Image (cartoon, rainbow, N blue to C red; front, side, top):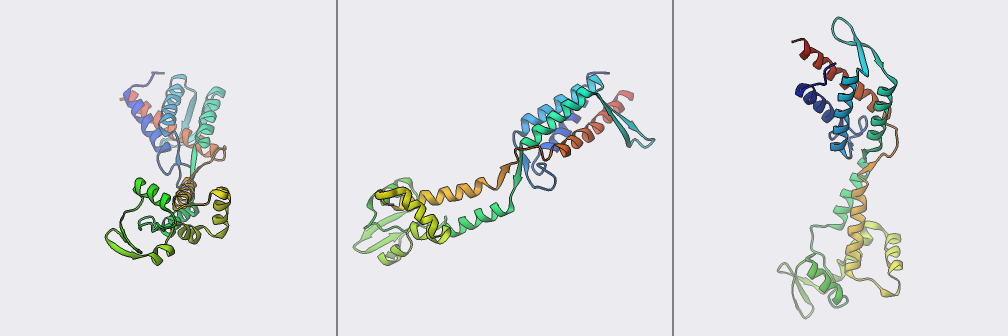
Length: 240
């Protein structure tokens, strides 16, 4: 059995890419495989090994359709190990988490200016201005200007980050933040950071690692099925 030239490597690489790209992570899951580059190399290496050792052979009918599969014990163990690794790296998409993330982005109004009470939270104001989180131009007595637009002190009091956090996360979440701060109290920076953590947490749940072997049998079948195509193409090239 030949080692397999560039034609074999290209076919094996194409098969590996088809099993590790976006949308391949679990049947109908909309997920993907983490560490896809490494797994692609492992698939190509496995196919080379199977081809060199004749570890998997296929019986075909007159039309070239596979009617039977034979594999050595070592080949089965190799395929099973790779299928398990692929299952462990499967990232599953959650539509609910995606909607939650979009909801928080909308509720926190991340594209709107963050109105704060300068008179009550001077330290917070300095922190936020330095961080560039919003633009406050001037303060004239009880009038403020955000991006050149005059804002009354009452409007500021109605649009602090605490109010946004309360609207988006609820009273229990607000109490949790305030309890964690203890006697130190909260500033608008506290609530902006809490909002960012909530958004980041929701985003991190959109794709989560499967972390088990639920998809191993499906990956096992895919590895064998695609190897049938790769080995058939290799045999066709040999006969030319």
